[in-house]
Image (cartoon, rainbow, N blue to C red; front, top):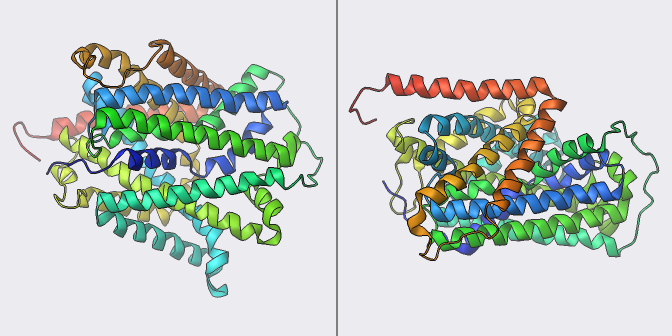
Length: 442
């Protein structure tokens, strides 16, 4: 029933990179450019986003070191605040994660379908077949064991890093004749525009927080979790700055503002007509890595919820040999497959993901102040302790609340819907707890 550590520092570093680098870096720069009137604002947003994300990574590194446990993103709320608050924050994230995985898997199939599928399946049915096949194959790999999942993740992530570096080589190939059309810059308030541009930046940098869900899977977690998070996020920041420099060098701000197929453009500069096939492969591998790491991470949250009695005990049953939550894994993948049949109606859900993330991440970061007080006995045991405390977490929390307020101002209706979803989670928790019989084990 318990989880035995089997993942090393390199495994976790690759998980961090894959949790962060999904599809965002191939689309978000265009959104950032639309809210940036100058290259200074554009690169300023990415640099600030990287610096703040590093602050967040250091904060979560210490959280993971002080409280290494399976399903850590749920457990840390439960330990520092209350299980009800933990459920309220996490229940929506579990649903939105399944929806995100389904939608992103669908996007990946749309890229690779024209390359490998016959003409008769160049349609919606062919895309659905490819999507479902990809998810099922990754499900089988994950079912074979956590170590097999990690090896697959390592290969996919290293391939993705290599492809991004190859795309960056477009800088040395020479500029292309980018169109001179510029999208009108309507927002004259630079502070407001900068806040909105940070929404896309932080969406692209997000995901590393899920690393603490693997606290029970990591060998020597108090040392390896912080080092893996730091190495992973440092790799991501370096890759993001490189590829943004490549985007800007090839397209300029005006080209960034109106081009959404950024990776395809860079691939076209390097490989000509074959560029589309190259970028299609890159997108598909990025999708596979994103789907696989979510299949690995999300069942661990179910495990933590089952430990608190919110979910039935079957969600925390673990195969002693493979270290796989066979029921939890099957449940999550089943949810993804069901959502795939209604993927088009879930596009709107994805628009709310960033609001959930900003509240969830900033609130999770607050737990470092409580953990420092509750785990004083660990201070001289060799665990990671961040420097410049409390400045580092305060920078992270303050910036994320600035982005949250920017989202609220830009789209108050969406923000209110998200707040209602959090409140619904609180209601569900208390209904679930009240329905349980005293002294009954689920």
